[in-house]
Image (cartoon, rainbow, N blue to C red):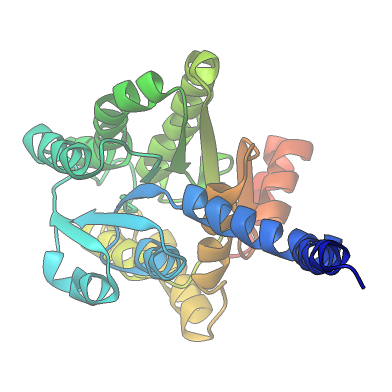
Length: 310
């Protein structure tokens, strides 16, 4: 055989083997997948991450490879997150200087914040007549004004990037109500309205605003709630109702009724990964049925249903 023909065959064979469709597709898909995975890694800021929903979700997001910053007053309770690869910073949500320091630190180290999860909050319970107004103000300072202050500091960076997701933790309590919870429910109703207005304002800048509405979740929330009720209303005109509510709540938590924090972790992770998340995620025990009843039943019937549980 002619030497030139032999060389052409060798060249053709080598070329064909290199450009086999299957092999080429696998290599290309692998490259695209790896690139996409790198692109999907986000810089995430979570407030109220020293326990419960915030901590559980932070662990998941860190393990998925995201750059996660967790902030709370109790920095000692976030050291496990640091060990996992998270970034922990001490912060009081009611102090603007603390908030500014956190945002400055993240921007300096990363140049952006992709996701803000405003999760810090607590439940102030007790009869309206019994709860001091200063305590009520503090409830709003944490649950609403702290959330708003953090949002104000982060939005300019998202707006310039024309991208971002803000998740605000409300509650099923932001859509319905229970006795002794006037200040807590008022703060969460305010978060709902705040978030709806914010969503409209930020739409033009491609920033998504998502409201998270948990139901009954097994966290420290119940302990704080019971402590407040006992502190403010265990004696006096509302003691009978207060004691019944405390007993019913203890029974519920002691029997393990409620959803595990994993349901929140799964939901927030989904929100973070969605290209276009929904405006609301209502998850956890009783969240959907209680809000449904509040929407579709009249006030008097809903009142009876709520009070029948006390």
